[in-house]
Each structure stands twice: as structure tokens, then as C-alpha cells.
Amino acid sequence: MRHIHVIGAGVVGLATALRLQQEGNSVALIDRNGPGEMASRGNAAGIAWTDVTPLASKDIWKKIPSWLLDPLGPLSVRPGYALQILPWMAQFCRAALPDRLKLSVAGKAAINKAALPAWERMWQASGTREHVYLRGCIDVYDNARQIDDAKPFWQEQRGHGIEVEELSGDQIRELEPDLAGNVVGGALVPGWMTVDDPHALCLSMAEAFARNGGKIIKSSVSAVKPRGDHVVLHLEDGEQIISDHAIVACGAWSKELAGQLGDRVPLETERGYNTTFTDPNVSLKHAVMLPGLGFAVTQLSTGLRIGGAVEFGGLKLDPNWKRADVMAEKAARILPGLNRANGTRWMGHRPSLPDTLPVIGSSRVSKRVTYAFGHGHHGLTQAAITAELVADIVQGACPKLDISLYSAQRF
Ligand SMILES: Cc1cc2nc3c(=O)[nH]c(=O)nc-3n(C[C@H](O)[C@H](O)[C@H](O)COP(=O)(O)OP(=O)(O)OC[C@H]3O[C@@H](n4cnc5c(N)ncnc54)[C@H](O)[C@@H]3O)c2cc1C
Image (tube, rainbow, N blue to C red; front, side):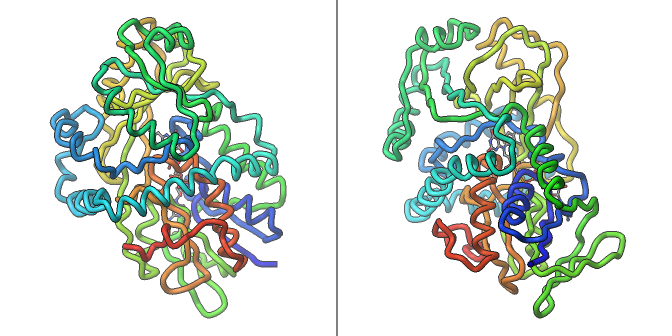
């Protein structure tokens, strides 16, 4: 039996630990904050397998300049971080060039297509199916020109076999009566699934893992050193753990450990903000995306969650809570009955690579260290399929997807 250590107990590390455990390995999780406490805690709860277009796409050029003019808009850069983000931005722009975009689309479509079946297996095996609903998602617009701009994306989704039904403003209000009269149209994507509360899902996964004998260690890993037929993990308190195989699943904090292993990955964080209202006075049956504004509204078991957007500000700068407040204000324009009292604000660090694809695969220096990080806007969606791919890599089996697209050495 192999002894495997998964570093990082976000949704990706949890899914990976469970899958490796299900395959008969002895698995321990190490996390400095506890299971599901970071990006996996407060996200928008979407199993968004129906998204196929990478962020770095051909139309992004048109949008970025106007977005950047508004410091509280869908995309912003904190003044103190502008120089640091430039190299990543340059790689992001390169990823939108036609030959590279083809690879990103292929990689994203393949992993998202496999994402839901993998989750179905994970929910069954871990007894966590009660956390998820088939609710569908509606892209909602208050601007007819933006609907025209969205049509090619919907067509691209249909090309990947995804059902997308265009709707008028009235049809949308029939489905969601709390939406305002200024909604002019959009599209329903019925296959989208929603988790009742992403933190609750993580805690249930951690419980299932512990119930089956998994160990959860609260500590920070400062170094991962492959040594012949094993790997030595150095913990912050000086303790060393000898492992047969280590998985780096530290989300936005993975860059340093990957760097120690010879992989200079351009990992950055896209910070996102939201507010969860426990007494919103409105309710939604579907997830509602507001692509023109860059955020989403999701009905959770814990309240109505409003937010998203992207802020480049690294891992250390304090949150700018105005960003969360402005999104709630804007949401009130399409949800006029929204009660904005009793809201809890949150900021999370998406772990993002410039080509919108995650890093899944072996480290440069040793096959005994496998990476599983960098899932950007889709870490919840892609966690279970990532877990299956990692388990295949660890077992030496042929992975079900072409993992060269996700290699850390692609940069
Ligand atoms: C506003 C917002 C909305 C989002 N909405 C969605 C959505 O609807 N659908 C979707 O699919 N995705 C969504 N995402 C993205 C998703 O939340 C992330 O991609 C995902 O949570 C990343 O999971 P992770 O396990 O890789 O990272 P994390 O959840 O951040 O976990 C990493 C863990 O590693 C631990 N760690 C780090 N370094 C060390 C170390 N050295 N030693 C020990 N432990 C360490 C941390 O404590 C942390 O617990 C959203 C993100 C944001 C911010």
C-alpha cells in the first residue's frame, strides 16, 4: 500500500485525497487552515461544466480597456500590484492568439466535458450527493447589444453538444419573477448544476475522508524534497514526513513549492469578492449570470450569494470591500426587491494560469510529486476529474484525457 500526502485541503485536494483513498492508498491531507477554508469556501457554487470558452479568448481584447477604466468594474488591478501583474498579462494576451487559443479551447472543453460524470462518481462514492442540485443557469442581460455579442459564445457551446436556449426578457421573468423589467433577454443553460453551499460540501468530503481512515494534519508545508524512492515533506514546525508520493494542491499558493521542484509556473491569483445575504427578500430558482457586469447571483442553502469579478492584487494585499458592495448595488438594479441588510462579505483567491487551464501532472524533477492546482474560475467544477487524472498518474495508468495540455512544463 502506498502512503500518499496531499498538500492542500481545498476542494481539489479533498477530491484528490478521496479518490486516492478509494483506490486503496493510505492517504493524509495537510493544510495550514483546515479543509475548504480558502478559495473553496465562498465561491459561486456552480458546477459550470457547460462553459467552454477560455477567458483569454479572441473577444477579450475588446473588453479589457473599458473594464480597466472602472476601478470597481469586472476587472481591476490594485495600483500597488500593476508592475507585478504585467508579465502574467502579457502571457494572457499571448494565450488569446489563434494557435494557442485552439489548445486552450481543446483543454478546457475536454476537462469540463469530463467534469460532471467524474463528480457523479465522487458524490456517490463519498455520500455527498445531497449537496448538489440540477438548477440550470440563466445568462441575463439588460443591454440588447451585449446579447448580440454573446450569441457566438452560445453557438460555440452548442457546437460542444451543450443545450443553450435563447430567451426574451418576458420568458426570463416567467422563470424568475423577481427579476426586473429592464432585463431584455439572455439564455438558459439547463445542464448547469449548483452546490447548496461549497463550504458545506468541502466539510462533508473531509468527513467522508476521515470516516474512511484518512488523516488530516493542520500544518504548513515549507518544502517538498524528492529523495530516491520517497519524498520528504518539511513542515513549518521543523517536523519531517517521509512519503511515497506527494500531491501539491495548494491552490493560489502552489507556485513556491512548484518552483522548488524546478517548475516556474506563471501562477497568479484572480481575487474575487461576494456578499451572501441571509434575508434577501427575493429568491431565484436558477443560477443567474450577469456576463455584462462580470458577476453572478446564486441561491444557496445559506442565502443569496452575489459577486464574482476579478481583481489582480496578489496574495497579501488587504481586501477592498467596496468591490463587494458595488456588485450588490448593481444586482439590486435587476433584483429590485433585494434586501441588502444582513450580508456577509468574502474575498477568495482564484489560482489562475494565463491560458485558463490548470496544472495537472508530474513535477519536472520527480514522478513522485504530482501537481493539481491552477483551476482559476473552475476549481469546484473540475475538482473530481482532476482527482481521477491525478490518481491515474500516481498509479501509472493511462489518464482518460490528454494531460500534456495541463503539464506544468508547457510554459
Ligand atoms: C468569487 C469566486 C467565485 C467562484 N465561483 C466558482 C464557481 O461557481 N464554480 C467553480 O468551479 N469555481 C469557482 N471559483 C473558483 C474556485 O473557488 C477555485 O478554483 C477553487 O476553490 C480552487 O480550489 P483549490 O483546492 O485549488 O484551492 P483552495 O480552496 O484555495 O485550497 C488550497 C488549500 O491549500 C492550503 N495551503 C496552501 N499552501 C499550503 C502549504 N504550503 N501547506 C499547507 N497547506 C497549504 C490552503 O490553506 C488551502 O486550504 C470561484 C472563485 C471565486 C474567488
